Amino acid sequence: MIQLISPVDGQVYVERQRANAAQVEQALTAAATAQELWKRRPLSERAALCSAAVDAMLAMKDDIVPELAWQMGRPVRFGAGELRGFEERARHMIAIAPEALAAIEPAPVAGFRRQIKREPLGTVLVVAPWNYPYLTAVNTIIPALMAGNSVILKHASQTLLVGERFAEAFRRAKLPEGLFQNLLLSHTYTAAIITSGRVQQVNFTGSVEAGRAMENAATGHFLGMGLELGGKDPAYVRADANLEHAVENLVDGSFFNSGQSCCAVERIYVDEKIYPVFVERFAALTRQYVLGNPLDQATTLGPLVSPSAAEFVRGQIAEALSKGAKALIDPTTFPADAPGSAYLAPQVLVDVTHQMSVMRDESFGPVVGIMPVASDDEAIALMNDSEFGLSASIWTQDLAAAERLGNEIDTGTVFMNRCDYLDPALAWTGVKNSGRGVTLSRLGYENLTRAKSFHLRHEV
Image (cartoon, rainbow, N blue to C red; front, side, top):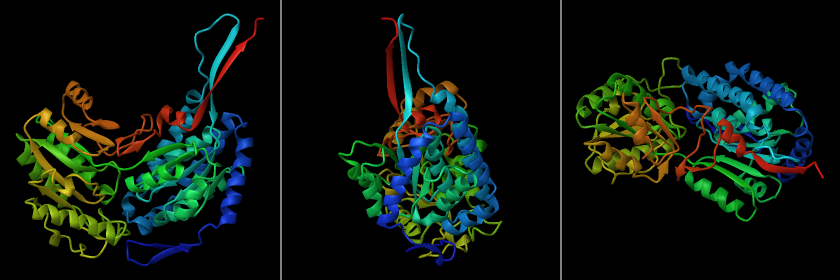
């Protein structure tokens, strides 16, 4: 059995039976059978069914929002936002499919017809995380189906009801049976599917350690791997930045979802000329958060996903303080903060260095370190001093400077005057330990299809 322990009260919220060997075998067989017929369906029919599934998911919003709070702690006042993002990404990927999947026609050559077509891979295994359970899953599920693949979803046990919601949405949309399947899998059976030779692509979002395990399982099996493994995302605030805008958005980028985002802002570098006022305003705005039960509409900061996750962040803060860092937030002003619980007050640290874990290792919690810098060069050096490279933001009113500096940052996405956002028209990717592969945009379709060339001589 899988027991989902809610971070709200530490109690079992729901439990389900894991899939057994026979169910896994049945799912793989059904997926392959359904995909053979699905890939022959016109793209317009695939689009209609996928669009109907999106509609069906949105119709469940009133149930989904409190479920999210109970499963992973996000305040109900923000729960609908994930569904808006889910819809934006799904509808965009449906809309661009005709162009993204269209055949490529090289320059004409007399007597020949030459094309490069995009063909589906087969069955795609999606291993999705709990922190943004609808957004991360939809990045692959909808484009995989649009491209003519079948999909098996293995969702995180912490958000197992999300997998059931996807299955129900596709059932209501009348998607062909077997084409999308939600399985509650152990690590053993997940690895068995990867090594079975019966899935052709695995898209995983999660930790670096788990990503390595996925790659190890896939070694020698010649299947595609898409790995999105988190980040330690930096921000650089230049002297010419709109200070009010930068403070407001960087506080949100640091603490939204209790900092439990792969692209959350976890370290900030500020031009020394504006550093004192930036830090003062940043801390003042952080103190306005309301930490509490996520089912309360007044709550703006919910618990972390588990007490152990909160303890990890507490440990990072304690280590930084022992090495000379200064905490700007008094946790006693947040009554819900309780050692040993999943409820953790937001924290802003100054006098930090890159010798501290909080500036080096992924926190995945409501803490951020802020450092002054004397130049663009110093800022870029510090931003690149990381094993991660998912996204980075530059806060300035100089577009040319942002583009010039962005070229020097080792990252998958460069933001100017915004952060912590995925634009579905742009490729979502990472460098270094943030992963490999691409989701979203037309490039996302290239990772879910294979090229097939046609070289036809018709004049002989």
